[in-house]
Amino acid sequence: MEAVIRTVAAAAAAEADPARVEVWCLGVPLRAEWLDGLPHRVANIDQGTGRRFQLGAKRWLYARALARFLRQSPVDALLATDPVFVKAGLAAAGQGPVRPRVFSWPHFSLDRLANVPWLAEADGHLALGTQIAEQIQRVNPRVAPTVVGNPLPASPEGFPLVPPPHGPARFLYVGRLQNHQKRVDLLLEALAIHRAQDWSLEVFGDGPDRASLEAQAERLGIARHVRWHGWLSDPWAQVEAATALVLPSDFEGFPMALLESLVRGVPVIATDCLAGPRDIVAPGTNGWLVPPHDAGALSEALQRFLVSPAGQLTSPPADRRRDILDRFEPGVVWRRMRDALFA
Image 1 (cartoon, helix red, strand yellow):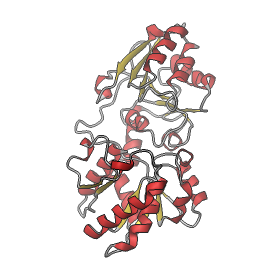
Image 2 (tube, one colour):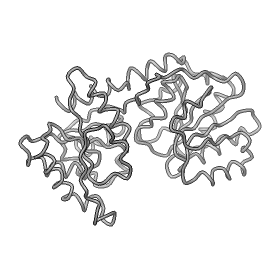
Image 3 (cartoon, helix red, strand yellow):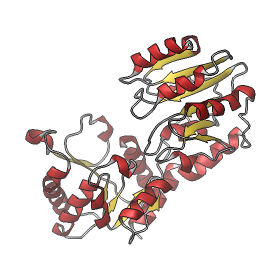
Image 4 (tube, helix red, strand yellow):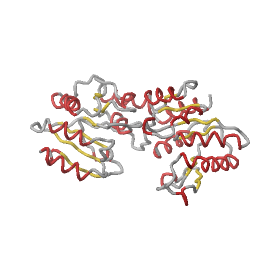
């Protein structure tokens, strides 16, 4: 979410008639480096109360901080990333010289959030995908959400196409090693069905489940196929060739790994989970979608690439890249957001 906010702010500043984007942190960030160079304010709310209070219990503290910020720096729109910030924003909205419109901008499926009914009071909504938009519409049927997606990260070097390997299939996983969400354990189980075939899995990422996943690969007899790279700030700089990226998550918000893969021409296999993959992956064209929690279905999708280097897909790498740029280039996403915020 922090990276997305930075990218959106930069895209807004690059416009000929830029809107000013300022970040208001309702609580002290655990890491503040991402705010460097961004206009921002921080409300020191967590000091004293800490995490003993749920977000909802602190909404009046948030409202007071927002009211103070609005008096100091009037804005036209407040974009809230959590339902409690929508509630606080509406309580504070009338206390500045100009009443801003309050929009929600949740970064997860609503079933992963608390206080969801508070979204019904917002003036508008930005949804990362069509499934989240449908959830919001059920909460607030009077206001149609605007589907915006997340922008590609800025890349000074561009996004060079990654060629397929000349030899055996080479699968990628890029993300946290946390089975509660990302389900790399399911990926290992699906790949184990093909343990007798020649392939490799490159894992970029780290997390609390790394040790158990390495042990699982040993138990399944596929440890020799798997290379664990750990966390890297730019994993794609280490990828010389790839067959497909695999994202076996149980849930997502808007999976940037899929965009980052497709813009480099690398097809994807993803679970059709809430939310995001369905808005990015066109089955049979740039990748495949499989049901969540289903190692057998995931194994079948992997097999497509084991028998055919192109995975039986119809879209060539250059077309995959162009499609993602057309839909998720930062300027495109910002203009979609701006049109919704200032309609």
